[in-house]
Length: 279
Ligand code: NAP
Image (cartoon, rainbow, N blue to C red):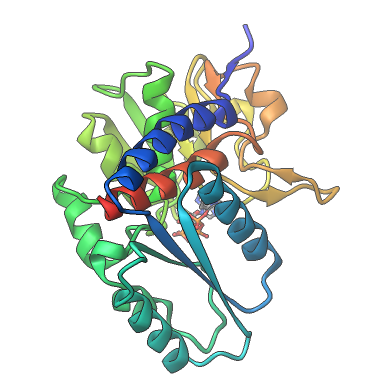
């Protein structure tokens, strides 16, 4: 039987309805959640992400402000903007869209954001909170994946969970959240030997590599839950994931599509974090 396709778009719409109600309650008490989105330079993908984030804010009633800076912005200029936003009372969340131009040190910029306004949860203080399981915000992509699993009634406890990718924004926090839910977690990366042998053990396989259609059916255990984080381009420049959707859907039990899987949930979690910050 082909996999059940997890409809991230529909699930995220239903979560956004709940968030909209929370925003209305906050507004009634005089608080309008506010998000500042900072974009530096001319990266086209970043522009699309920022536009989607702004649209999503509008949908649930969050006030959003965009700060678009030119490609040649210096680190000092960006740090000054972050400092200003840190002090702005009507802004509860600050998001600096990555990647930044090469003259800017991303770590320094992330470190400059007030942890209580760090709605991406990239600041070392928030990362530490996630590590010990006592957190204010969760990073949006892994948090969105946990919501998708919960929505589908997929219990993580005791399951073999394999995460491919160890980035600070996806792979590592993903592994931690699965561990908090009592999964038995293995993290793979470019030095992992015999990747297929590891991935075939997975009851839950999360793929965040950044390589189009990299995971094929022979790497997947029959009936496994496969979560595709990738946002890649195929040979026809069409958006696709890290998982070879057509072959894997014949083997997996559940599968997220690209687009329409993890992506919409990531943005929804950004809205959720902004509302939490406002609270
Ligand atoms: P990243 O920082 O480039 O990390 C990629 C990871 O994949 C690294 O840990 C790398 O290993 C590993 N890797 C690369 N080639 C591999 C191979 N052949 N075998 C095993 N592991 C391999 O990427 P990222 O920021 O985590 O993003 C991953 C993908 O998710 C991208 O397509 C990105 O666009 C997408 N993304 C989507 C969303 C969303 O909302 N849908 C959000 C964030 C990211 P090493 O560490 O050894 O180099």
